[in-house]
Length: 545
Image 1 (cartoon, rainbow, N blue to C red):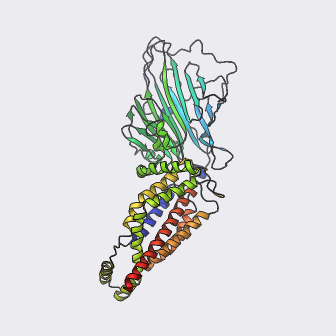
Image 2: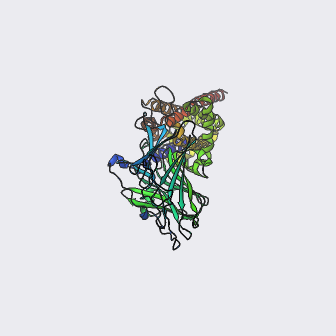
Image 3: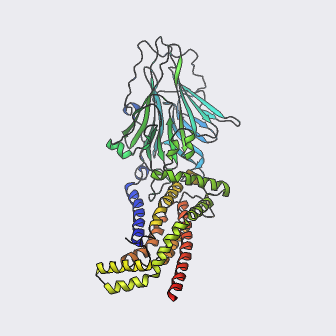
């Protein structure tokens, strides 16, 4: 197989991946129908929902648990921090809406991005509760002293305490400049016997595709979990429907999450025995959750559970919060290469203070690192270009006799000391690195709303005026002119059409990805032009002697 055929194969394979993914990811739910979703009860979602309490144990409201006169008893509770605007429903005391104040909406740059919500278009909420006699689940009514809380200037943490009529308290602690929220249950056992209880934490989401994504470059949306034993696992909605899921059910560590492009919500429970579960709830709703067995609460004592909820951008730095949480930035099987590449990109951005310039600098550095391999490839192609007239004569001489034609071509390659695969193998070695950089750029929230120059105000969105895709097409056309003309007329026609097709495809790609491709092509053109001229000059000198 000669270089042109392998090159065409790679182009079509790469294009086919995107087209197939686009085909298999249909329009999102909000694109098709807007319907208010009602989250079913947790009992239908839990694999084990029965926790026995010791006979005689009971929870009695403590004497000092009094609902203040100014306490709000209906509606929602609003929390404002420097990072978040949060709405907590008093039914269940659960977070129903989260706005990320430092991230802009896809639809309106003047508004904050909404991750968690429960409205007519999208359902994506947290739920938690307790299992046991007289313990509140996520349907119980909670009350609070105020209906609005704000993180004051100079204040590092904001505590919001909710309580039920039975005396159970659900305490949220929000922190300055963090997306990590402490969620604590406090249970007072006023019975005469130890109290046994369990807690559950789950995320419920519909299967709609988040706004802002592109059908040409689909990204994962759905549940995921992590355990020390099996590490990071994604669980497709379709597999939940088909009941073809496999993950650690019983464990004592790890976390559960819902992922979407750039963002994640994850429960991070403490190290306790638990059972993980996923469930299709109907109406295109899905749950991933975990049930944890609490330590027995002795009579007259207070117990409960302290856990954490992360709601914010996905980042490789999340490993500092919980083991494996950084894997929510999913680079796939090339993570081992993509991670250090993104670290380099971040380091460069710290110097140039522009993500677009950082992409350019990193692409140049990678191109320099692979200069010897690229040179070998372009030398082989240059030799093929030089002997192209001889190949054409051989083709005319042997016509349709494929056996003699191939034998004559191989003799020519041997005489001219040309390896037909010499232009291909160096390119194949470089492909994993460039694909890794491609996915690192695609998956990094840092590039979201990051400006580059003039008309490109968001490197994660498509070029609004298609300037970069047009340049990309021109660069591919120039590269095609530098390559030897394929002997097969069909291949030659395809090579002429590919720049046009790729330009159209790149219309829908994020500008950061197109910028990377344009810079890489420009450097390749310069290197190939230089080496081709050098080879032609050497061949002319040799021919004259």
